[in-house]
Length: 130
Image (cartoon, rainbow, N blue to C red):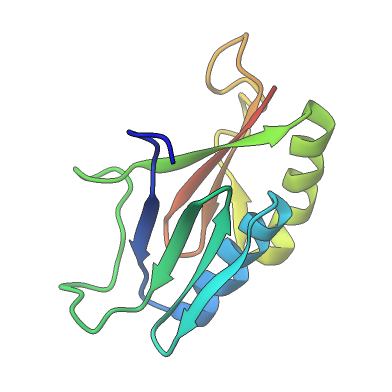
């Protein structure tokens, strides 16, 4: 265990089946495997770090706004440029839409090759090549 390494991220989602469709596909495509499952949530793990999606009864609302204070996005290493491109091609079938289409794949700058995806609930994932 490395001190300071991210242990887990927990995302509270308004619709668990919809979150499983988008996050489950993306995380599995990136090499994560299902880790835990319970009535209100599921998690996927890779090298000891896991991502949780949960439809918690304690949520104060039912929408996520990535442009409000709080979490903007999660960024993942996506492998090669070809692997990132393949994820983009497959993403729409799993509830994701490509953001910044006019600047893709260099929306993060000319030396940054990445895909910025947004799911149906407004969560953003950045998939970085390299």
